[in-house]
Image (cartoon, one colour):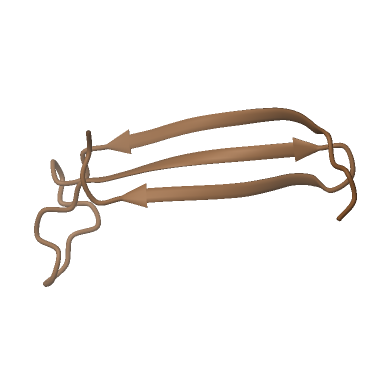
Length: 59
């Protein structure tokens, strides 16, 4: 594996209460509250690489 230098990271924490307007609700998910954390990793050779972690419950 070649050496890689990470040039920057951008972290976004995206949370919203979708159950207020029942956005994303269906027959199986009646109380949909979602959150997600996104990390964009930038390095000199490959450009951006995205990582995503999502969970059902808001903290």
